[in-house]
Image 1 (tube, rainbow, N blue to C red):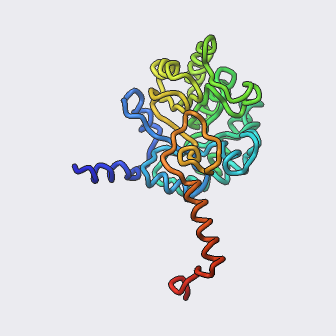
Image 2 (spheres, rainbow, N blue to C red):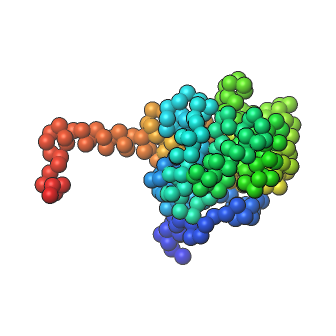
Image 3 (cartoon, one colour):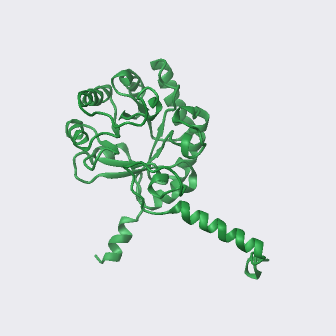
Length: 279
């Protein structure tokens, strides 16, 4: 196969629906899968066309879409609307959606009702829920209701104030706590486990111990999958904060700003629209 054909093959969208069983089969395979956030139809479509197998409708939309100060501000209605948009553009990608803050903590019954609501209204395939040992009963209740669950341990953004800010989790004596969290969510039935802002060596240990796929974000290279907020991946907006764990594969923010400036200039000069853009 030529180099060009290889590049083309790697860019192909999934040809059949990606299912949880497909992700489970990647556990320990040495072939990690890529997951990106998406919050609208067009972005989901672009990422699916780019071969991304898993899309996460993250409550990070609170920050990057709605401009809220923390992820705790986003509502169930907002999450349902953007999740449905992503599903419509996702093609064959597997879609995970976050349960927003305040929709699952109170009781097992609340957690099940919220999970069922967001899947019914959006068509997503799986819900993500933050927390370890303390939230394991909610995970079990959701799983017992027949709903796929992705757990989220390590740094959990909904609890940023309780954690004392954006800090790496699991250092020193905290390592045992992270391992306990993983064991608790897996015992409760979690199908996938996201680990955020965890030392790479600890993330490898947890991944080796964990019987279900782990997905890292700021958790080193040894997880079974990786996820990033897409804005961090392409430097959008151009003056936005970039976490240490994010790499930029493009400069979309600057490209958009340049395009907007060029458009404004041509409108002001009277060179747009020209004859070719008129009926």
